[in-house]
Structures are given as structure tokens and as C-alpha cells.
Length: 290
Ligand SMILES: [Zn+2]
Image 1 (cartoon, protein in one colour):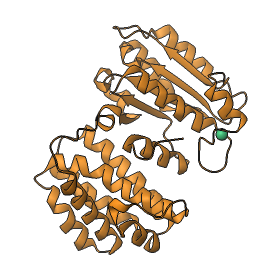
Image 2 (cartoon, protein in one colour; image 1 turned 30 degrees about the vertical axis):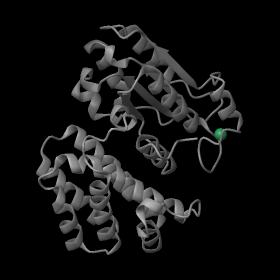
Image 3 (cartoon, helix red, strand yellow; image 1 turned 120 degrees about the vertical axis):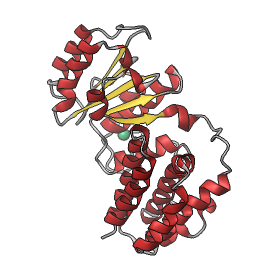
């Protein structure tokens, strides 16, 4: 099961439940073992045949995945040194990707130290990232995404494990982050465009606050969704906000908000223009609930 107290795992779990988990994801940062453990958990969730919360841990697919013996989860590990991920391995992966899965509905490729692919290897993987077979997922693991070509990055959703797994959230007090995130969530609940813009104005000169608040905003939406699924009584830290959100918004809108937070977090990693980001936050949140 995913640890919903961990922002990265929570957002992966939310994406899986929308059934729109990206075909290609990059897990960067943290340590080799942590990355692989999360990749295996994600792969398990992708092949899981339970209709509910994934991974269920009890179906045949989960059991095999947890025993590292699932035929549709293919793991490629190389050393962390330049060009260790050879183009020949990429070609092999490509040809295997076109063979339909054996047992599950999906086929998952986990590529450790994939940042060591040279340009040739990356261009080879790009071909399949551009038009992946519908049943295929790629989980690319690396210490840093900086080794990837922009073309590869543009086809992948990046999850940074380093930031999320290190608990020292810079020097921002949790109350400040919480207040900013709650402000946004309240404005969404109020269904007021002006309130959203007002709430987002705290981020205008504070990029760090936005970076810290986005995962918390997503946590609030996720808490509201869990109430919708009647899986939880809300989250003390967020007070009444999640239950208010869950009473005013549909499941669909909440899922869209969770996804929107995801894509905002991803653009935040790629986009250096802070003012554009603040505008994007407002635009995204305003567009959803209609
Ligand atoms: Zn399962």
C-alpha cells in the first residue's frame, strides 16, 4: 500500500486511481534502494487486478509482483556510470515492449540508473515514449533527471523523491505553508474566482512557499476525495476544509484538482518563471470546478 503521509506516494496513488497514471514516469533523487522500492510498489499497483484501491496485496498479480516474479514487470539495472545503460539494452526493451503482457493488463519496465543512457540510447527510448503501446508503463529511475534530453523529459512525468523523502522542509514554518494551502482550498470551496486570485497572491513573491504549499494543497484535495469514498473522517490538520470540499465538489472535480496539482508541481520543476506559475495555479483551479 502507498504511504499517504508521503506526498510523492500520495500523488502516485491518486494518479493511479484516476486510471491516468502516465505511460512514462521518472523517479529522481533519494537513494537507489528507496527509488527501486517505490518503483516496485508502483509496478505492483499497475498490474494489480483489484478494482478498488491498488495495490491490493492479495490478488495473484500482487503476490507475484511482491515476490519479484511477475512476468510483466521487467527490471533493468545498470551501474551508475556514464553510458552504462547501453543502446543495445534499450533496443531489447523496445522490442519487448511491443509484445503484449502475459498475465496482467499492463506491462511495466523499471529502468534503474536510466540517466546513464547516452544520447543514442535516449533517442532510442524516445521512439517508444512518443508512441507507447497502450499497455506499457516505463518507470525510469535516476539520481537526477538532469542527465536526460529535454525531449525525453517532455514525455515523462517527474517525481522527485529527494524533496519529498527529506523531511526538513527548508526553513518554512509548517503553519505558514498550511495557511497558504488552506487559503487556496477554501477559495476553491467558495467557488469564487476572486477569492482564488486573492489566496494565490501570497505566492507572488514567494517561490519557496508555492513549492512547499502545492503538495499540501494536493493533500487537502486528496483528503476530500477520501471522505467522498468514505474511507476516512478527514484530516485533523486541515480542519473542516476537506469535508467542505467533499460536500461541494464532485468526485470527478476532486480527481481533476489532484491531477492539476500534480501537473502544477511538475511545471514548477521545469518552469523557472515564477509569475507565470502563479497565474497557472489560478487558471488551473478556476477551470476545473465548472
Ligand atoms: Zn492486487
